[in-house]
Length: 122
Image (cartoon, rainbow, N blue to C red; front, side, top):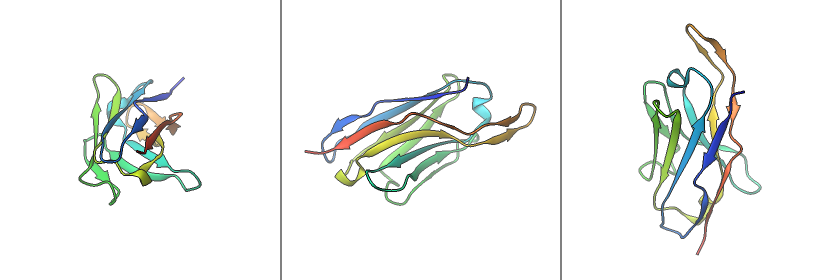
């Protein structure tokens, strides 16, 4: 019954920007950490950015300063704003919710979105 649905992927030129969104169903959203991952063709899936329930953010070194992860608890959404995109950042981008124990609600299972393709090319 819980799902994550990404949107916003597409084709962008090098140096351009895209904003991705992830709509989350289910309960306890405001208490959960959320992540964005990406997987380039033939490569391992890598963690791009995280945002905690207290809105602390972290980024992988290669995107720090260019990408911004945010959340809107009222709308149950997580976003990733990507600026100055590079061709090597072409990948399927995934929204992710880790398995988490929430006081008063118990364990909330890990959930992956279906992914949205970002292509950076001229």
